[in-house]
Amino acid sequence: MVLSILVVDDDTAVRGLIVRILRAQGHAVVGEAGSVAEALVLTARLRPDAALVDIGLPDGDGFELTRALRDRGDKVRVVLFSSDADRTNVTAAERAGAVGFLPKDELSGTALQLLLEPAEGAQVAGGG
Image (cartoon, rainbow, N blue to C red; front, side, top):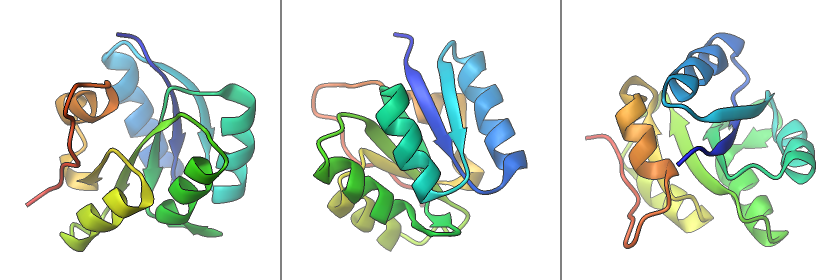
């Protein structure tokens, strides 16, 4: 299944890496954002199937962005990620409405595929 995906991270190098991983999986990266505000605008305009969102953003955090998307009724599947592999991020991601959390060092095509594609009984995943 080809998904349209928005990548949200304030680090352009990390965004570039994620874009390459996603395109190698055959997905369409429809936009890139470096902040919560930019992500909200792009999500409304582009209506992606999914968004990969860093927790640490300059004008808020990925949990806040996920809640905002959910509250305004967007149907985007959000996967949160962070360089902080703290297990509490898994629970916080679930509470915010994300479909999963991955530590940055575990970002791979396979891990992303499992979280991005809608599946019966999908659960929040996390590093460990």
